[in-house]
Image (cartoon, helix red, strand yellow):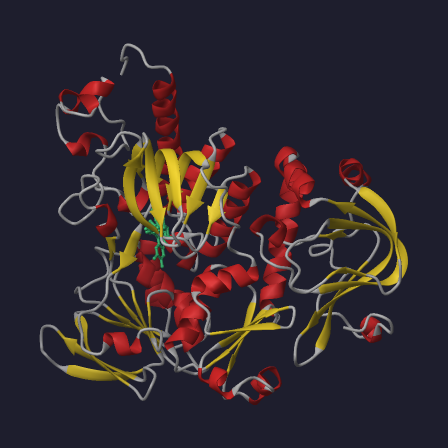
Length: 571
Ligand SMILES: Cc1cc2nc3c(=O)[nH]c(=O)nc-3n(C[C@H](O)[C@H](O)[C@H](O)COP(=O)(O)OP(=O)(O)OC[C@H]3O[C@@H](n4cnc5c(N)ncnc54)[C@H](O)[C@@H]3O)c2cc1C
């Protein structure tokens, strides 16, 4: 990119640099906090301070002068923002590790304070008020950025499963992205000069001029900087958390903040099922509700703030014992050794047993509103299948966007499965058509879902609905196959803990040798705990999962303390 002429300096920026919500000027007190952490130096006109695709950067405070921040791709170079004195130049990636998505060029010489990211993160963790200021500013900027078509570019066909896999992966991981259908003329400049073979698959342009042809989720994660570097060989952890939904994130935050060396892995993304919820309205302290994605993002930053190692996407595939440690094997070949483990595996969506379902998964059939949204064209109606809260929320969210929604429910009423506030809103919403006592029978469409046939379970009468997407929210089941034989599960595969393991546990091994019963959330294996939806008998909600995550850390710490001081049992 040419930096000399700065041709963009006069065009209006996409984000208003004078908007105090997005670019609040640092106060004298905030500057005083930041100054000792870094070094001040002169910056010259045309100097590039950070560049699209950079793996890391110093946090900067502009003291004098002006910096333009630009977004550049194969199509155009756009002016994102103009930064002036007392602006803090930092993005969420300082916490998440994602690569830089814009380029900052000095447009007027001046001076800037450069702060190493580690020192900045430590300050944010130390200074509550300043930390809150930073998170709120970053969340507002992030929302503003999501409205722009910026970030990594994905070019792929809407009829292609891999395109949808990649889109779901970036959406779940909140990677700013911009998708163009391969047939869209606007995709042409990006694709020019690429080998013909490559054009049959989705292509990702992660920035910095590089591209990836149909990458795996792990390759894409590495390219955008989501994936942490390999762990030091032989490193052991006090606590390994498997699953980074609300339960696992809570365990990570409480574990790491309580001084336990903590590693957390998730097979897909931070946030779990909760991150797919359009609006969580029953979480304490958020009277207006908050989106699941926001909750997940805040928790992720909080966990990173306390130095929990969050590793995404990495799937745990076995739990064994090795030299007195719990050994969690990961699908990339690594093994994490832990003194205690918290399983926060959640549940996975149930699928409908109807013909050709797999043909349309990712091509109209989805298991979360966000994913469905990417598969809908403007004007398409949507079908939501299910009668519980998650289905009600999804129907309302899609209707709010102006879509006609068919809510297909097998039961004869919504009373048993759905909260009254959702039922009332649905009843008032003219765009939502509730079809009680109906089941889905057939799917049809040319390369993408177009029609869904439903049947009244009492009369057998069939009706075919035209819709661009069908979101299936009919319950879930645990994902514990890989634990069978290692820890006790109930007959549906949920993990048994504490009292549900049975009476007189203290009389059995290994509890007899330990001289205690299992703790409340402890599994049949001492030092391994289970929290949230995966636990047998759990309340399938965010708040209980979070509470259990916190409680399990307390039990894990107690287990570790007892390991360190062998002696007469006291439980
Ligand atoms: C659309 C929707 C809306 C909802 N709305 C609400 C609401 O408004 N209020 C409310 O209280 N609850 C709501 N819920 C329920 C709530 O989201 C769950 O109860 C909560 O997320 C459970 O948290 P968890 O941590 O136990 O599991 P999950 O959120 O399911 O997270 C489990 C995580 O573990 C990971 N994982 C699984 N197996 C492995 C493995 N082997 N290796 C590595 N990682 C693994 C998964 O990828 C996942 O990210 C909603 C759920 C959905 C689907």
